[in-house]
Image (tube, rainbow, N blue to C red; front, side, top):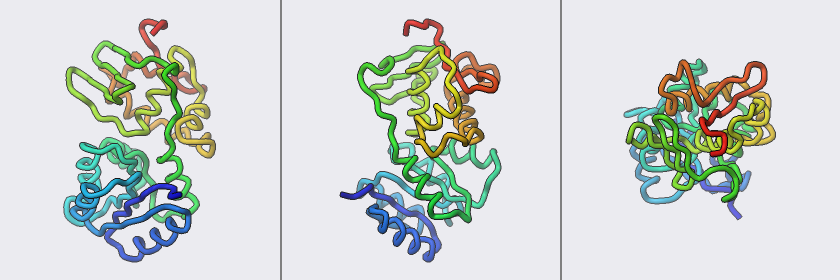
Length: 233
């Protein structure tokens, strides 16, 4: 069985060739695209589980490509970039990426990021509320929708999984390691800076005052807590 279908989008032939050989050897079905237009056309024509997307594509570029894909698809997206500042990471997440990896990178690291991006948090009907109403936002976990001020706000798959896990364990302090391993897998327990970027993005999308959050709270030296006004929800 295939481990998943991956679309590699990069304008460098050598990178596409190495990616195809490596990922195929790991059991993935792989196709590639050289430009944003070619990538968008392939996404319209077929189904993929994950896209590896180069930031510095010619034309509209990787960020805009990411935004267009995310506006219609929940495909997992990993941005490939030479950039490594927190601002750059926030830009990638804000465009809809689930993850980012800085060039040059090792293949074991890339494969670990792919496994983490494809991982979905197992849930059951009994695991937490199906619907949560906050002061300015509504979260519909069954429909995977976030409504803020009457408008739908799109979350990346990983943002949604992180939010679901926190709400399922509402009003309790959740350690950094627990959050990372629950959402990204057992190999990601020490990447606190990585988690901080995702929490910052969730606050921007949910909180009325991201600088003074009322729901996604920091537990100093421990982790984070999702505070619900009514603990019975």
